Length: 98
Image (cartoon, rainbow, N blue to C red; front, top):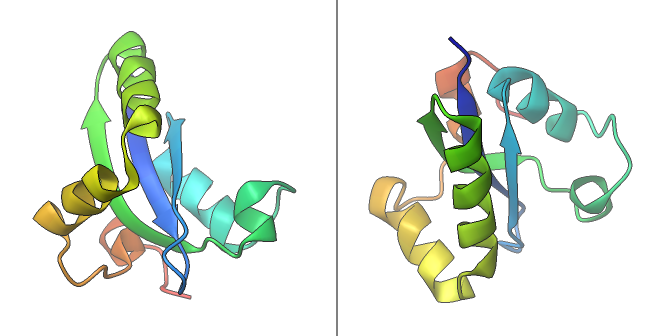
């Protein structure tokens, strides 16, 4: 069965990016290595601070849209509920922290 991930990347300034993928390791690696042009490359968003997993693509898409519509403080509260120090969680995935 496929797994889908909703994730939040940030930088030193705590700019937030919310995304959805079916391969979190590959996607975080791409963000960290700036292999795709876009928002995360422009703002140097290389730190994974939050992710959640689901088996249903439709619920993943709904959740991503939901989080993108949240107020910034709600997003911060969500991150801090599981990662109060804003640590880079990419190490949990076996990626070297950059």
